[in-house]
Image 1 (spheres, rainbow, N blue to C red):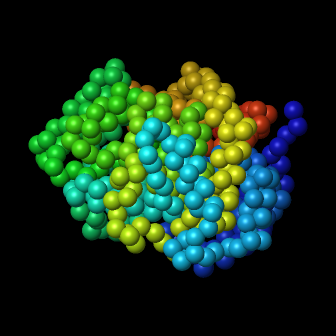
Image 2 (tube, rainbow, N blue to C red):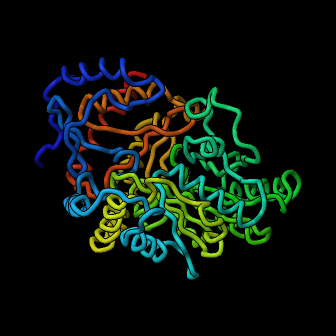
Image 3 (cartoon, rainbow, N blue to C red):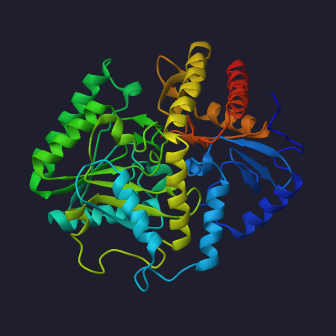
Amino acid sequence: MSRTVQIRTPIPGPRSQELLRRREAAVPRGVANVAPIFAAETRGATLTDVDGNVFLDFAGGIGVLNLGANHPEVVAAVKEQVDRFLHTCFHVTMYEPYVRLAEELNRLTPGDFPKKTALFNSGAEAVENAVKLARRYTGRPAVITFTHAFHGRTLLGMSLTAKVSTYKYGFGPFAPEIYRLPAVYPYRSPFADPAATARHALEDVRRAIEDEIGPDKVAALIIEPVQGEGGFLVQPPEFLRGLRALCDEYGIVFIADEIQTGFGRTGRFFAVEHSGVVPDLVTMAKSLGDGLPISAVTGRAEIMDAAQVGGLGGTYGGNPVACAAALKVIEVMERDRYVERAQAVGERVLARFRDWHERFELVGDVRGLGAMAAIELVKDRATKEPATEETAAIFKRCYENGLILMKAGHHNQVIRFLAPLAITDEQLDEGLDILEEAIASVSRTR
């Protein structure tokens, strides 16, 4: 097997060190960075930095590059559109790629009913507009969100997001009428049976709706089928189905946040499909554009049409270049069976993760859906104390040896797998070998 990773200089190398000095002087500290390197070129599942070091990428731009970095057909579609025009603003002069992408998303999302789609720039914008539509449609103010959720960094997105220390500390006051209820976290549940955990969580949701909020006050419920930043927490199908039933009972709009889980990542085009639940609205972003900024809200036509003329939009929403990229992403994913590839990648990754769980006490839990997989690291399996420092040490060793990773979880104790689905089996095994060596090294020194 030919080796992909090529580390020519210590990490960070001299050019990266110089750029780090410039970055410190010019960019605020609140803008976080995972690894102390600067990209010069990306291809597929690899990244070359400014010092010539070649890394394997298990982060995928935080789940953005499912199709792989710089996919040649996406690049060609972008160049073709750039030669035509860069921008008109859809609200001023319309263009066909926006309409065609809306048609494609109406086709792809779950549900056999009339749908419509509005395009935006980011995941947070999609979430904001989904909530706006739910409130306008129902005439109600309240929104239910969940523990461990991440829905963006705007005021409403931040209000819906759970993690205070990183995303919310000192930024309040937050948006009103947001109610946070327990999601399902099987590894840390007091119930041994996952089904019992789901039933208990559903009882909490019903109690809150009926006794604390009021059914006639709840506009929407928003949930990630697999909670991303929260630690890749797979919400059980019975929990999602129970939430859908509650929404039907009380006339609540069910919003599936598929921003990280969408576009094949979990082995279905959308993660909610695993449960058989049909949401009223779906939010999308990330891998929709394979690196170009674009997001969408797709849903029931009557809800999407609830806003008054001018109530939805933005100057750059559904930019024609980003639309061209997204249309090509959908075409390639369907033609080349990326959903099936996600299943195969996920099986390979989870098999290695389960082996590590058997061999390393540090690995407390293995979980995932398709190629959205993670391990949670703990200092002690009995107490389940988060291994935050050990996780940081593993990350440092990995990027020094040519592997880029992402953390997750409330205590940054979860290692999540978000490599491009275009990664080869050889590259995948090489990256997993680097991660295994790092885990073994840290485990030996505990």
